[in-house]
Amino acid sequence: MGEPEIEKDLGKGQEESTKGYIPGKPYSKLRRELADEDLSNPAVQKLLLSEIDKLELRVSDLEIIEQNFHSLDKDKAVLVEKLKTHNSLEILYGFCLSIGSGLLGLSSMFKINEQGWIFLVVGGILIIGGILSKYVKWS
Image (cartoon, rainbow, N blue to C red; front, side):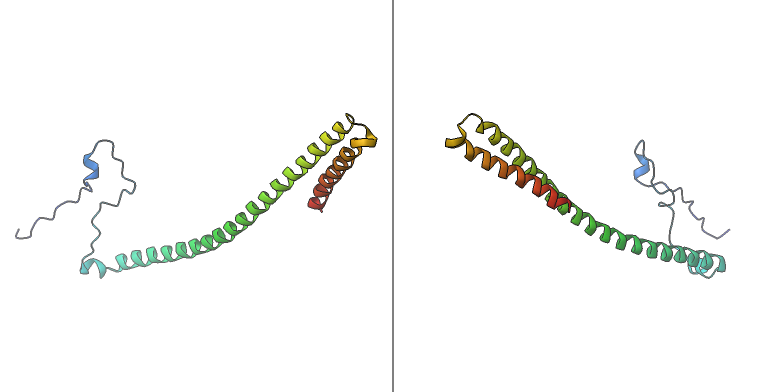
């Protein structure tokens, strides 16, 4: 009768007093301090050792995942740079073909003997350059 009464842990904190609060971890509000007599219990020791083993296994798994993440992040950066180069080559290809075709079309407006041959030559060079840029990129 002389023993003090132990308070019952209801698990309520300040957050639960607000409406609509749903705890993310249901055991987060439980009392976590262990007394010396609790630690001397073999069942508690086995439980704690089991949890330590689980955490060590999880840590080793996460270290592997972290290494894989870093290698994939490097691969992604390399691929992004390659894509930028690919896009610039596509722009060059389209520019050369369109300007070259336009110059070939303009050459018909001028006499071939006077100024028309310049448009033909420059337009042909641009078209051939565009086709070569596409061919070299694929090789």
